[in-house]
Length: 359
Image (cartoon, rainbow, N blue to C red):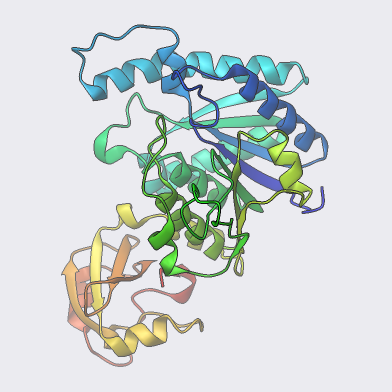
């Protein structure tokens, strides 16, 4: 494979493996598994993040229209997840490959111990030549506990396992420079850094079966690329999409990775929802902290502690306009931080090694 990746996370959207009637597209799943098997046989470690449990459930049971949306989703996901993993298991078995089901919730990523347990589980599966098939646990993940969609989950998994690349398979060829329906629009094949004007020409519509649109995909892709992981968005409904992509023979969008960040920083980057404290900085401290140089957050630059935290907590760091600057792990609690606001020659509140810049 020309791209030379050693470990990849492949995310398959429900719009790729669901037919127009809302039922699973088993021939597409089979074709995808054949490609994943071929990739694995090249010595590349593969983690699959797959949607499709609700669609699988829809093929097995008729739901009363009296049921509300949340309980319907729970019912279909609980029944459908069994069918989905069995479908994958049977297709992988034809290649003498074992797969494992890994169901996760957002909570699993907020707690560092949970996070490391999950990481260890995935690593032992990979060491034993097993392909993890990861999905959100829709049975218990409702409302605020839900990921934005499985793109967000796939980004977290890629960061956690230090993957070389995250490949997102959707039902479009990539990010376009205009309305994809117009013949004049073309796929943007390479995106570097935090390009903010992408949202202006990305279609905000979502697929019939998925939760996530292209804007959430690009936001997540830029974040993951910033952590040093290449992100590819390609059309999963095309034949041989994975093998073509890895052989650099496919028109799609690639987000160019920046310098690789440490494992701890990768965890911090995705921990905004777990942050307890909020610390406001003056513009001078913001400039120093986001300069790209190895700089820690010192109390002299702090204007205000907006909410309390303990030593070891994840804290949000905001500027004078309440915009997020970054996230970090507090070296001491908010009580000590309040005493030291604006003071020189004090111990750093956030050490550089434990600071992630969101800018």
